[in-house]
Image 1 (cartoon, one colour):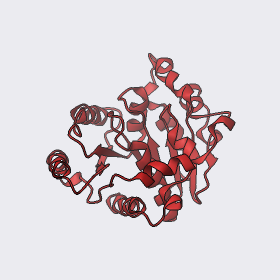
Image 2 (cartoon, helix red, strand yellow):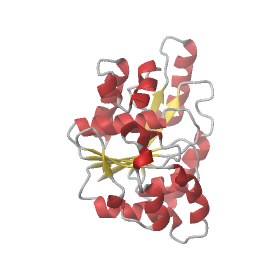
Image 3 (cartoon, helix red, strand yellow):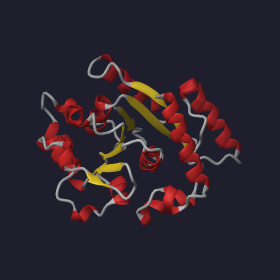
Length: 251
C-alpha cells in the first residue's frame, strides 16, 4: 500500500486541491484509493460528502482508537473512499500531548486496511504539529505542493528538517516523492524565476507537471466534485491527470 502525505505548513498552496484531484485521478485509473482528510477545515471531506450527516470522523480514529474502517464512507467516484474530517480535529493536538504513542496513531490504524487499498492520499493541515507528524509517520511518500509565488519557499526548510527528523527515528522509509508547483502562471517572468528557485531546492524531485492557476479548480469543490467531473476538458483536469501519471511512475 502506497501512502502519500500531501504536506506544506504554508497555507493556500493547493494541498487540498491536490489531495482531492490526485485521489480522484488514481481512482479513475482503477487504483483502489482512500482519501484521508486530516485538516480540521474538512474541505476535502466537503467535496465528496455532507459532513453534517457524519457521526464519526478521523478525530475518533486518532483520538479515541476507533478502527479506520468504521469512519470510511464511499465517495461518488468509483474506487475512491473517504475517511472524513470534522472541526473536532482542531482539538486533537491537545488530546495527544503527552501520549507515548501520539506520533504512531494513524500508522497503527492504517495497518488494518493495507490489503483494502492500493493508494492512500492524506490531506494535512497547514502546520507542522502532531496531526501532520502522524501523516508523515504513516506515509511511505511525501508530496509537497509549492505555490508559484515570491514567498513560495517560505518555511520549506522547516518542513524538510521535520522530514529528516521523521526519517531519523519513527519512519526511516519515508521518501520525498516530489514537489509540485501549483497556482502557476507560465506567462510571467516571476513565475519562471520562482520555478527555477524551487528546482534549485528540490532538484530532480520536482514534478515536470505544473498546476496552473485556474478558476475551474477553485470552483469544483463548491460543487462537490473533482475537476474531472466538474470540468473534464479543462487545463486543470489535464494537469492533474498528468501529475497522477508521474506519481504512479515514481512509486
